Amino acid sequence: MSSRRSRSRQSSGVSRISDDQIIDLVSKLQQLIPELRNRGSDKVSASKVLQETCNYIRNLHREVDDLSDRLSQLLASTDSDSAQAAIIRSLLMD
Amino acid sequence: MNPDHHSSLNPSSSLKSRFTKTFLRSLIKINKQRPFPYCPREIFQRCHRVKTAADKSLARAAGSRRVWSRAMLCKIRNRSLRRGCQQRPSVRRIIIGYQTTKKGYCLQKKMSDDQEVGTDQASKLRKLVPGGEAMDLCSLLDEAAHYIKCLNTQVQVMRRIADIHSS
Image 1 (cartoon, rainbow over the protein chains, first blue to last red):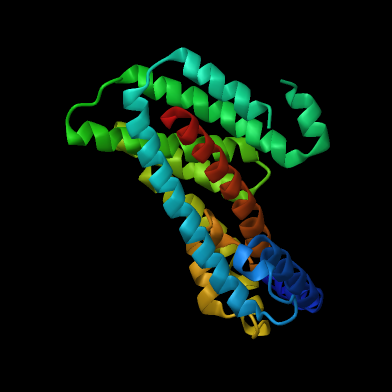
Image 2: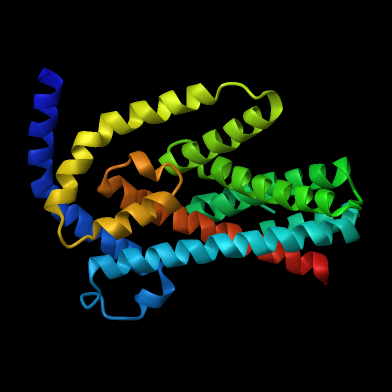
């Protein structure tokens, strides 16, 4: 009971600060999404940013699925340790 | 050839190298277990194993300080436990229940205050980010940003590996 009261006190105090926090976080997300990065920073609404974030994450998931499909097929064809070593070397040099 | 040098310059490059090492190690293991899958079921299983290895390596490389990486590792562990011994689904349910009741009140408060952020989109985002169901809006946005960065790294590395293998 007392914990519920303190929790509600906390959230009413935090909600005044959290609007700015949320605006900050939404703009940070906007910078990460390629479609929204090029548009003006104040013209995009928060709900649009969230929508594009969802679409972008879904696209990334789909790409990962396609790539793992491709990789599992490629694994079957090449089976040399030297190829792995070459990959490790080239990737770590980035 | 100097990962320490890279990590001091740019934290995301050490995420990349951590993910690459772990993922390549798992790929080699998968390849050694069953080098030539014949039937379609084995092919599908292998693809699923590669994807699981990619997600697990990514979550490990991201570290345990993030909610999404912990949630992802939990999900993978539970899935393998369920497949292995058909036990302990109740443990997972209890943990998720505890998390939602803890944050449940804060969630409702924030939903009513933030009219500009649609609750529909927020709930869609919750389903996409691992562990998003039990987070408040601020953490959800923060975790989503980090998750997107890591997903980009994952796609980048996997694409390089696929390109190198296919050339």
